[in-house]
Amino acid sequence: MPEDLLFTLGAEVRCTDGVGGTIKSLAIDPHDDAVTHLIVEPVDRQAAKLIPFSLVEAAPAGTADGEIRLRCTVTEFEDLDAAEAKEFIPGSAQWQIYAAEPMISWPYYAPPGAMGTPGLPPDPVVGQQAITVDTLPDQLPDEDELSGRERVHAQDGDIGHVQGIAVDPGTGRVTSVLLRERHLLGHRTVLIPRSAVAEVEGDGFHLQLTTEQVRNLPPAGIDHPAR
Figure 1 (cartoon, rainbow, N blue to C red):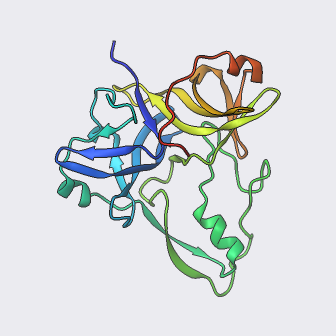
Figure 2 (cartoon, rainbow, N blue to C red; figure 1 turned 120 degrees about the vertical axis):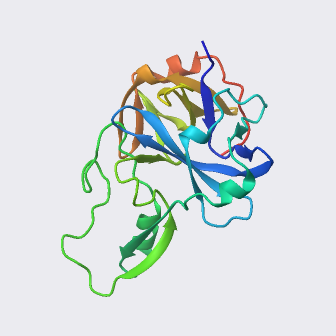
């Protein structure tokens, strides 16, 4: 049985003939918990690229830093669609920040204004401007974005944040969540089984585990890249 593929946010992505960039975020279909695309920041820091899961090598990454390999050349990588979307926002700095922040609802949808999430004004705002932000593009209206900003909550408190996910290489379905756990001596990474995730809301991932149970899990041994 093939090993799971581990997507670590910030990890290097290599094409067949060179480096493409680094993983910025992941697009997940909330209906079947499957990764559909990688959002990769190119080495030249131009607009992020939208990488279909089908271009990812089926074999797990074999390097210590979690390098991911693609079935395309650097030139083909550069020709892929940009992970951008035009958004109309009010001119205030507050709304600009909101527009650039993803709101994850996987596997449940949290409508604006629910569970503490910000809501859009009910009426059109006069004087809006169009900007381009690195986010899920318009052709992925149903996917959720995993960016690494998501907090992880045990039954008895906040324990860290998401650093990546492990998936089945054949289907892309999520098998584990990579947690960067915070503790008194610093940080460590652990893999949380998908079955231990009770729900995902506007404030992050909620586990069916206590802090003590998480700390009893073996370390994943993945400390690079740090986020």
